[in-house]
Image (cartoon, rainbow, N blue to C red; front, side, top):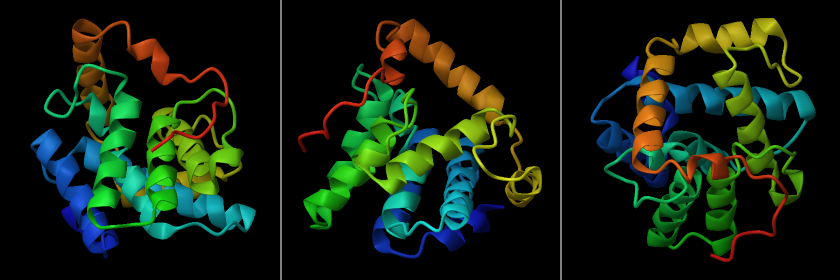
Length: 195
């Protein structure tokens, strides 16, 4: 199954984001890599359903790294969604990507657990939020997709080990930085980050 993410990652930046997830998780084709892959496939389905254009590179990079800040090797002790966004923005800056694209990817990571829709931040931001809800709920939240579309995504990239891995990481985060975890659920739509 390692080929699924590897085949999706076409650009140098996409490959770098995939490599960062593999480095943080110390795994190739691990549960979090597959989680990011499924999120991207769901983003594509959500975009197609809505007739929305997306920046594929931003969407795939965000899908790969949106949870990377939860890993102890990446975390600096802050809010893991924000740290994921900061790392994404840094990687975009390193390849001299336009600031707006770096900000879009950072916001997609930082706001993927926001309670309210994030369309004003960008299509990729909101679609990652919706895709992650579908993924984490195991398809109970469909956000406009059919059961068949969700089942097909889950069949293409198996969910084996996902809940165990995210549970392990969340328990460690609760132990190491309990005050920051509630802050992943952004309560209000804030202004764009000032990258």
